Amino acid sequence: MLVYTLLIHCPDRKGLIYNITQVVFQHDLNIISNGEFVDKENNYFFMRAEISGEDIAPAQLEADLRNTLPPEAKISLLPQQKKKIVILVTKEHHCLGDLLLREQYNDLNASILAVIGNYNTLQPLAEKFGVPFHEVSHDAKTREEHDQEIQAIIQQYDPDYVVLAKYMRVLNPGFVEQFPNRIINIHHSFLPAFIGANPYRQAYERGVKIIGATAHFVNSDLDEGPIIAQNVIQVNHTQSARDMAQAGRDVEKIVLAQALKLVFADKVFVNRNKTIIFY
Image (cartoon, rainbow, N blue to C red; front, side, top):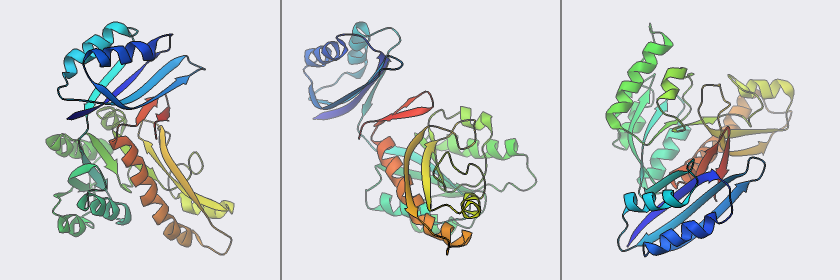
């Protein structure tokens, strides 16, 4: 039995669900689960369905769906399989270690093809799990030169997604454009608060009572890409900025894992600078 995920988004109009399900039925396929959402403000329709059958012809199914949908419709028909990812790191181990463990025990729905770091600090950790590690030092290089080296390595692996697991460098717009809505970052604050560097120091200086983490897609605006997942914990005046950073590590790795679980299950639509998520 084959199982695919069908993703559709298009301008809303009457009869969309009926037309889509009729095409699926005509292909002798079964809808295992289905979710729809209409952005009423923009009159836009989103649908995610899991379909199964003894024989699925993706190209023909997509063509038949396109004949019954608005011409602007975006259709994706994706086999349910593990995603391929490359992870970028700097020196902090907690997010990388968590993802390596999850992959080891089949709790990530992804295959980690490689880890790339601008330091070699985490090379022993990656290699303990049998994952290739590439050090690309940023010394004596422009940001563009450094990113081009990283991009060349990533392209060798042809991943579905690039994950920034506490990668503490800003990627240049040319790099980001090569992977639209395919770069996922964990930022150590509850965005949109405390964008940029040293958010725990910023939080400490403002005397906040909660700190958090945000997983988001990366775009050309620093820490302003579409948000996938967030969470917070409480803090108080007795904690220093370093204490807050230490407490925040658990939130960071959990939020990143939650976001990746949603993305790798094809449950996330990007709609302008927001996400539509089918939980």
